[in-house]
Image 1 (tube, helix red, strand yellow):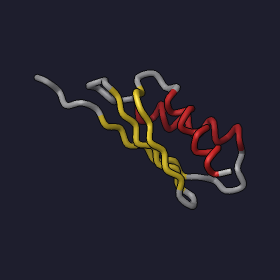
Image 2 (cartoon, rainbow, N blue to C red):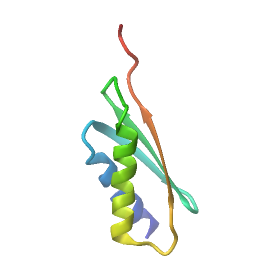
Image 3 (cartoon, one colour):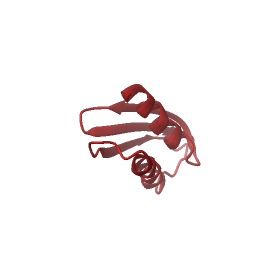
Length: 79
């Protein structure tokens, strides 16, 4: 079901080092993950989350191929 797919993909995104919270939405052919982190530098976090979700999708192999979008929100720099 779409609900179990969403929770499975959210767990995959949450497992990435540095991720503190994930909100995941499924559209017709798009998976959008909004990720929160406490890190001030988020250089490689977007690609790590995208790779984790894509890897999990490859394991599940759904009938339709999803496009994965990732948004990272981090605290502002205190300097």
